[in-house]
Image (cartoon, protein in one colour):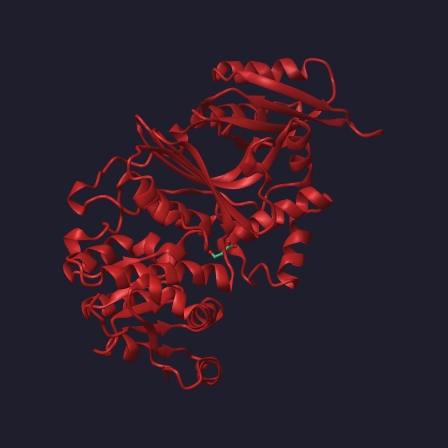
Length: 441
Ligand code: HSE
């Protein structure tokens, strides 16, 4: 084999993931080189915190606080973008591409929002943009979807793709605690950010889901069309009731091919407790992928953290290193499908999605209440699968009624909920949580 000079890498951001990448690359240098066929050397590091960066890097690489110096340096072949955010990161990635450099990024927000323009620019400049670390940290799900399952017509994906919210839900179920108290604890332990909005409101999960949908169905990034609902309104009571009915509540990202369009939705979801994915606890991630040939497949692992994410970043570095000298036409397409064979099938509006539901309503415990509620459901053609009534505590007039519905369409449930909330016997709002069986069909 011809001996090539080592590939030169510029690292933008040496925080948690950047530091992990630097360390793992040094630690496993020999093993990685045997795989990649040539050395992979970090030549330049950019970080705002120069002192910390110098301490981590020592004399092995140049350190700068100007990331543009890295993307404009002719000696750099691959830029790793670990800065995060979508403003400067976008400028840097576009500049790196324009300069003919390959890019490795863990930035899901950037790709979900600006991936279409980024990949178009990458094609124009004949470079690769690799993003294994952007979805589910260390789990090689991009590789699996883009290459391992390439024979399949992917039918649907359902994933626990946000560790922070999974940790919160696991703790709420284990301890019966409220959302607020677990979030505060998670922040104290450093699991949740000071501003946890992206994690708890499903936005981070929707970014990752958008990317997975693109490479599964050969569609552009459609983050703006994703339906996003987080976990901040879930109560310990709903988690307990779901458990009593044989279900767990997870924040799922679901994307599914249907004859009317592609579902792209993130929301709390009841799933049967006996499913493997229902038992994914704490900060771990898991993704269930249904392909027509392979059937259901499940991928599990750490969705974040320095070393797991470094594992994905370095896998991309090796991939890019191996394909560096290949013609762009012979590389794996960025979004799995050939760019001139992308589909413009629409994203299905949430109101048209078909699923089943958990409904909880607080009612006056008196004759005729159930009849009133079931009349409203029947009017919307909604069929009830199971029902329980929780007796009011002594001295209280209100009971909880929990109903599980058969499959129906979201707009029918919306109409039924509006009707139920108007009933005089019903107190306050109806709680609605979607439900998925995640079986083999
Ligand atoms: N904040 C994410 C999570 C990890 O909680 O899973 C990075 O995407």
